[in-house]
Length: 188
Image 1 (tube, one colour):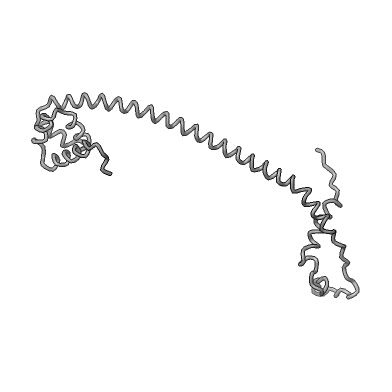
Image 2: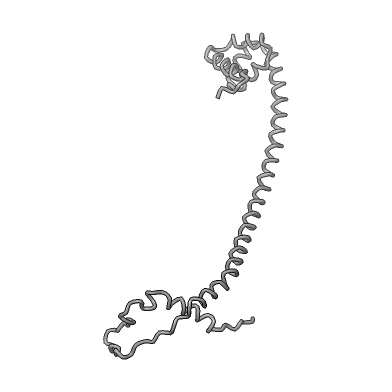
Protein backbone atom coordinates (compact mmCIF):
# COMPACT_ATOMS: atom_id res chain seq x y z
CA UNK A 1 0.00 0.00 0.00
CA UNK A 2 1.11 3.52 -0.64
CA UNK A 3 0.96 6.08 2.11
CA UNK A 4 0.65 9.69 1.20
CA UNK A 5 3.03 11.94 3.12
CA UNK A 6 1.14 14.24 5.46
CA UNK A 7 2.63 17.62 5.96
CA UNK A 8 2.03 18.39 9.59
CA UNK A 9 2.64 22.07 9.22
CA UNK A 10 -0.33 22.45 6.86
CA UNK A 11 -2.66 20.51 9.17
CA UNK A 12 -1.45 22.07 12.40
CA UNK A 13 -1.87 25.70 11.34
CA UNK A 14 -5.69 25.63 11.01
CA UNK A 15 -6.09 23.62 14.20
CA UNK A 16 -3.89 25.99 16.17
CA UNK A 17 -5.70 28.95 14.67
CA UNK A 18 -9.07 27.56 15.67
CA UNK A 19 -7.87 26.80 19.18
CA UNK A 20 -6.41 30.24 19.65
CA UNK A 21 -9.51 31.99 18.35
CA UNK A 22 -11.74 30.20 20.87
CA UNK A 23 -11.97 32.59 23.85
CA UNK A 24 -12.14 29.85 26.49
CA UNK A 25 -9.09 28.04 25.13
CA UNK A 26 -7.04 31.09 24.29
CA UNK A 27 -7.28 32.46 27.81
CA UNK A 28 -9.57 35.39 27.17
CA UNK A 29 -9.44 36.38 30.82
CA UNK A 30 -6.46 38.40 31.97
CA UNK A 31 -5.54 36.06 34.81
CA UNK A 32 -3.21 34.08 32.54
CA UNK A 33 -3.05 30.37 31.91
CA UNK A 34 -4.30 28.03 34.62
CA UNK A 35 -2.20 25.02 35.54
CA UNK A 36 -3.29 22.13 37.68
CA UNK A 37 -1.07 21.09 40.56
CA UNK A 38 -1.21 17.44 41.55
CA UNK A 39 -1.16 16.55 45.28
CA UNK A 40 2.43 16.27 46.48
CA UNK A 41 3.71 18.06 43.38
CA UNK A 42 5.60 21.30 43.16
CA UNK A 43 3.78 24.52 42.53
CA UNK A 44 4.79 26.16 39.28
CA UNK A 45 6.94 29.20 39.55
CA UNK A 46 5.32 32.47 38.69
CA UNK A 47 8.06 33.31 36.20
CA UNK A 48 7.34 30.21 34.13
CA UNK A 49 4.51 31.23 31.89
CA UNK A 50 3.59 29.66 28.65
CA UNK A 51 4.09 31.87 25.68
CA UNK A 52 1.32 32.07 23.15
CA UNK A 53 1.86 31.95 19.48
CA UNK A 54 0.53 34.83 17.50
CA UNK A 55 -2.75 33.77 15.93
CA UNK A 56 -2.89 33.92 12.16
CA UNK A 57 -4.78 36.81 10.72
CA UNK A 58 -8.38 36.30 9.71
CA UNK A 59 -7.67 36.54 6.01
CA UNK A 60 -5.59 33.36 6.21
CA UNK A 61 -8.44 31.53 7.99
CA UNK A 62 -10.96 32.81 5.48
CA UNK A 63 -8.76 31.66 2.60
CA UNK A 64 -8.47 28.22 4.17
CA UNK A 65 -12.24 27.96 4.67
CA UNK A 66 -13.01 29.22 1.16
CA UNK A 67 -10.49 26.78 -0.34
CA UNK A 68 -12.15 23.73 1.24
CA UNK A 69 -15.76 24.96 0.96
CA UNK A 70 -16.22 23.90 -2.68
CA UNK A 71 -14.70 20.47 -2.11
CA UNK A 72 -16.84 19.89 0.98
CA UNK A 73 -19.99 20.99 -0.83
CA UNK A 74 -19.18 18.75 -3.81
CA UNK A 75 -18.57 15.79 -1.51
CA UNK A 76 -21.82 16.43 0.35
CA UNK A 77 -23.72 16.60 -2.95
CA UNK A 78 -22.07 13.40 -4.15
CA UNK A 79 -23.06 11.59 -0.94
CA UNK A 80 -26.63 12.86 -1.22
CA UNK A 81 -26.81 11.82 -4.88
CA UNK A 82 -25.55 8.33 -4.01
CA UNK A 83 -28.11 8.01 -1.22
CA UNK A 84 -30.87 9.13 -3.60
CA UNK A 85 -29.77 6.52 -6.15
CA UNK A 86 -29.94 3.80 -3.50
CA UNK A 87 -33.39 4.95 -2.39
CA UNK A 88 -34.59 5.06 -6.01
CA UNK A 89 -33.30 1.52 -6.59
CA UNK A 90 -35.18 0.32 -3.51
CA UNK A 91 -38.36 2.04 -4.67
CA UNK A 92 -38.02 0.56 -8.16
CA UNK A 93 -37.57 -2.91 -6.71
CA UNK A 94 -40.64 -2.53 -4.50
CA UNK A 95 -42.68 -1.19 -7.42
CA UNK A 96 -41.76 -4.23 -9.52
CA UNK A 97 -42.81 -6.56 -6.70
CA UNK A 98 -46.04 -4.62 -6.26
CA UNK A 99 -46.76 -4.74 -10.00
CA UNK A 100 -46.19 -8.51 -10.02
CA UNK A 101 -48.60 -8.95 -7.10
CA UNK A 102 -51.18 -6.73 -8.80
CA UNK A 103 -50.98 -8.80 -12.00
CA UNK A 104 -51.30 -12.00 -9.96
CA UNK A 105 -54.38 -10.67 -8.16
CA UNK A 106 -55.98 -9.50 -11.41
CA UNK A 107 -55.52 -12.95 -12.92
CA UNK A 108 -56.97 -14.58 -9.82
CA UNK A 109 -59.91 -12.13 -9.78
CA UNK A 110 -60.74 -12.83 -13.44
CA UNK A 111 -60.70 -16.58 -12.83
CA UNK A 112 -62.90 -16.11 -9.76
CA UNK A 113 -65.41 -13.96 -11.65
CA UNK A 114 -65.65 -16.52 -14.45
CA UNK A 115 -66.14 -19.31 -11.92
CA UNK A 116 -68.81 -17.35 -10.03
CA UNK A 117 -70.67 -16.52 -13.23
CA UNK A 118 -70.74 -20.19 -14.20
CA UNK A 119 -71.70 -21.25 -10.69
CA UNK A 120 -74.45 -18.65 -10.50
CA UNK A 121 -75.99 -19.77 -13.77
CA UNK A 122 -76.02 -23.42 -12.81
CA UNK A 123 -77.05 -22.65 -9.23
CA UNK A 124 -79.96 -20.52 -10.38
CA UNK A 125 -81.07 -23.32 -12.71
CA UNK A 126 -80.92 -25.79 -9.81
CA UNK A 127 -83.05 -23.64 -7.52
CA UNK A 128 -85.45 -22.81 -10.37
CA UNK A 129 -86.08 -26.54 -10.84
CA UNK A 130 -86.63 -27.31 -7.13
CA UNK A 131 -89.98 -27.36 -5.37
CA UNK A 132 -90.60 -24.02 -3.62
CA UNK A 133 -90.75 -25.48 -0.09
CA UNK A 134 -87.45 -27.38 -0.56
CA UNK A 135 -85.78 -24.33 -2.15
CA UNK A 136 -86.97 -22.15 0.75
CA UNK A 137 -85.56 -24.58 3.30
CA UNK A 138 -82.17 -24.76 1.51
CA UNK A 139 -81.89 -21.02 0.96
CA UNK A 140 -82.57 -20.40 4.65
CA UNK A 141 -79.41 -22.39 5.46
CA UNK A 142 -76.96 -20.67 3.09
CA UNK A 143 -75.34 -17.27 3.41
CA UNK A 144 -77.97 -14.53 3.20
CA UNK A 145 -76.04 -12.63 0.51
CA UNK A 146 -75.84 -15.74 -1.66
CA UNK A 147 -79.49 -16.55 -1.07
CA UNK A 148 -80.50 -13.01 -2.03
CA UNK A 149 -78.36 -13.18 -5.17
CA UNK A 150 -79.96 -16.46 -6.20
CA UNK A 151 -83.47 -15.13 -5.59
CA UNK A 152 -82.71 -12.01 -7.65
CA UNK A 153 -81.66 -14.18 -10.60
CA UNK A 154 -84.74 -16.34 -10.43
CA UNK A 155 -87.97 -15.55 -12.20
CA UNK A 156 -90.00 -13.12 -10.08
CA UNK A 157 -92.92 -15.51 -9.76
CA UNK A 158 -90.68 -18.41 -8.66
CA UNK A 159 -88.77 -16.16 -6.18
CA UNK A 160 -92.08 -14.98 -4.71
CA UNK A 161 -93.30 -18.53 -4.11
CA UNK A 162 -89.97 -19.46 -2.46
CA UNK A 163 -90.07 -16.37 -0.20
CA UNK A 164 -93.67 -17.26 0.72
CA UNK A 165 -92.49 -20.70 1.92
CA UNK A 166 -89.66 -19.24 4.05
CA UNK A 167 -89.62 -18.20 7.68
CA UNK A 168 -90.82 -14.61 8.10
CA UNK A 169 -87.54 -13.29 9.57
CA UNK A 170 -85.39 -14.96 6.90
CA UNK A 171 -87.72 -13.72 4.15
CA UNK A 172 -87.60 -10.17 5.56
CA UNK A 173 -83.81 -10.23 5.74
CA UNK A 174 -83.50 -11.50 2.17
CA UNK A 175 -86.01 -8.93 0.92
CA UNK A 176 -84.05 -6.12 2.59
CA UNK A 177 -80.81 -7.27 0.98
CA UNK A 178 -82.46 -7.62 -2.42
CA UNK A 179 -83.99 -4.15 -2.15
CA UNK A 180 -80.67 -2.52 -1.22
CA UNK A 181 -78.90 -4.38 -4.04
CA UNK A 182 -81.49 -3.18 -6.55
CA UNK A 183 -80.79 0.49 -5.76
CA UNK A 184 -78.92 2.38 -8.44
CA UNK A 185 -77.20 4.75 -6.00
CA UNK A 186 -74.96 3.55 -3.17
CA UNK A 187 -76.72 4.49 0.11
CA UNK A 188 -73.46 4.93 2.00
